[in-house]
Length: 420
Image 1 (cartoon, rainbow, N blue to C red):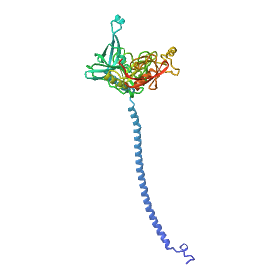
Image 2 (cartoon, helix red, strand yellow; image 1 turned 60 degrees about the horizontal axis):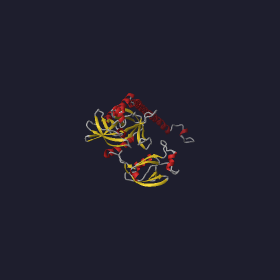
Image 3 (cartoon, rainbow, N blue to C red; image 1 turned 90 degrees about the vertical axis):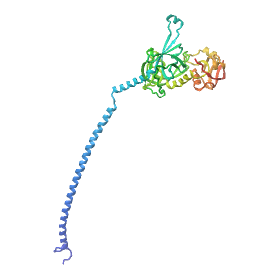
């Protein structure tokens, strides 16, 4: 035995060597089997890859196809959502035509016939005739009722109505109101088959299309169109016709042509609803497209009273006045001196004539009213506004005024405005 009992140094083949040989043989067999299994795994992986690739390709094709479809869809939608100019124009024209067709049968022509002055009568032997328009707004029992302007029927000795179908009828005044410039007429209802529909003038917007229908220059049933230029314009007016503004009228401003004879006619929206009563036009050199209509929400406040009572009940003081300071009708220094006012009094209204409650309270020429119920009154317009908006018939009101330079106060009981 050698020095080291170790197989490494032994000249003999040990049992371990035999084991190694046997293990090597088994190892080769195991390696072959593992290679076979690896080959199967490799083959399986290739199949999976092929399947995944096929699915991926199919998915890609589907996505591309879907994208192409969706890419074309918005174009089709846009094309469908954008009608041609002709289509838009025709639709707009249809709205105008339908609105006019709906409202036109309710619009009438009004002939205000007055006895001619003696000198004119001797020359012509004809009655004076003025023209206007009106709107049939109600039919009840055997009668039809027409809404128009007060100035259209003012001073009439006879009123004749011409319906849209050409029928002529005699009309009588049910009620009228100079301040609101509104009147209601009554005619025989035979042949009247349609009444106007009122719209909401409070919801109007600037730029909306409107149509004016009336009897300009005797051309009954005429249409003009335009837009709402302003929804709530305050226009100063002179109720007494003396050129001094003593009231304000809330109106719709429009550029639809309104001419002589259009007064009392309808301003309608694109649904054929009456949203205003044509009442005036500013006619001066260089002024065009300035027409005005009384909004229906203001009209409706007055119509019921005209139908029930024949007039509008407003508190009445009974003074005819002129403003102490008015750029349109200024008083002279001499006139102001005659009033003997303190220098501190720079505004108020001068009494020119007193009647009714004011006369009973002792008001005289050249009294200067400066306050109602301790509220300053600077103009005739403010005087009327305070009476009509703050007071009722039968109310008491304290009035502060100056007479011959002395401040005085009196309490007045307001009456009912007499019919004019």
